[in-house]
Length: 111
Image (cartoon, rainbow, N blue to C red; front, side, top):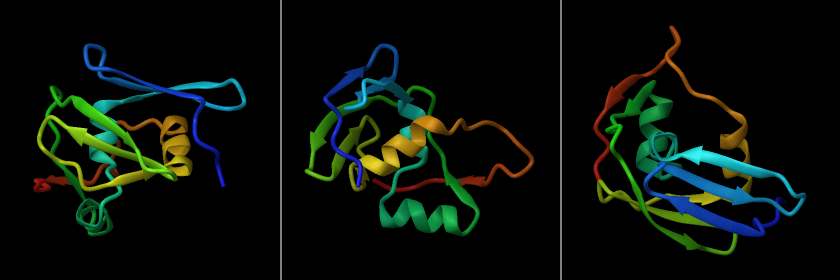
């Protein structure tokens, strides 16, 4: 189990969530990436079917709520269903998303 970060910051202007981990490392994850990879059941179901939520480049992370084992994130499109476990967040920071031939098709994921 991964421990909670020492500190958490959110830059709406830069569209980045900052996590400072216990080992001294710092991680930055973009708001668009966080929204696209939401772990809620609806968004996960879309990804399992090979689809990806449509997320505007202008998406902002408005609120960050610690939930013990992870974070509940509230986005500017109203989506707030998923809780992002610490281990999941650590994994997201290590991954980079891009346009590859295997990029899933996009769908609208309701708030």
